[in-house]
Image (cartoon, rainbow, N blue to C red; front, side, top):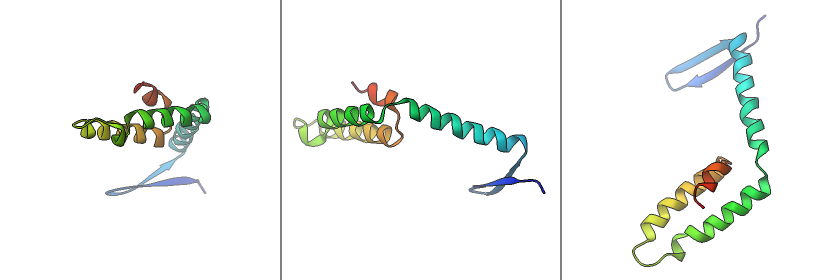
Amino acid sequence: MKKSIIFRIAAGAVILTGAAVVAAINRKKKSDSQLALSNPEELKNLYHSLAHKYHPDQSKPGEEKIRDDIMKKVNRAYQEKDIEKLRAFL
């Protein structure tokens, strides 16, 4: 019996077998190894410094909307554990 992996998609299901399964697993391993390259402590410290710098409560009158948008992007980058996106805000 062949092993297969089923991925749910909005319209239905896709069944991957053989080489497609291996390719999907290798992509997952690659993304996990890229996350492992970034130091979790450095990521946390960078996030906290950016949160302090761009928090809407720290803004001058009229800057709240701009800082709120920037904080949303910083939060998204932190949740994705993307240190390069966080460094772009420095």
